[in-house]
Length: 201
Image (tube, rainbow, N blue to C red; front, side, top):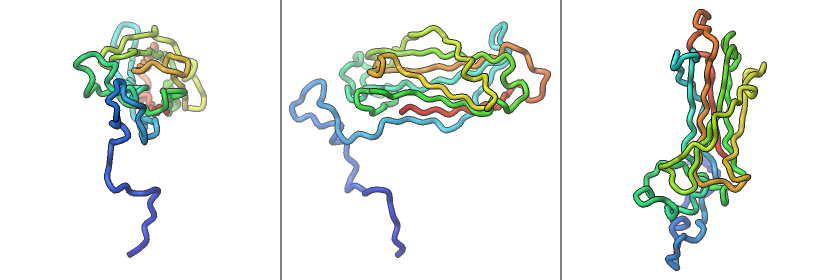
């Protein structure tokens, strides 16, 4: 039988004892142990474009991050009654959420000759201090177009949740891509060929 090397040790059984351990029955629980590295990622994906969604915008696409739980160690103790389970929030197991960022990378900005003509990109942030099912808009749409007007064909941006490195518990980001110039007569319309990747760590 050939020798197979594996990167680590296979445990005898999967256990959530480090997450659930609470010998004194305290609320909130003690800090969990043996939790995974704090990270989420999205593989490169194409954006879905809509032509003429409103007057003055000839092409639009949006991308929403998941709702991140940046303090999963608090479990359900903060949630409103009835929302403590199955919220769909993505846990990021960084100790106290400190220093984590959402990174977004867009490739293919030079795929089409019109790929940057009349482009406008905005970011909008949503958050809630205690309830993942009630995220509220906390910023006006911010114009970040200058980050995307590049000759390299690739743009990258980072988003730091509010809290100056000690973040609010639940957080989400929305990116909106608008084309304010009609290039429908040019080959390739209505797909500029962008591919978006993202990661939180």
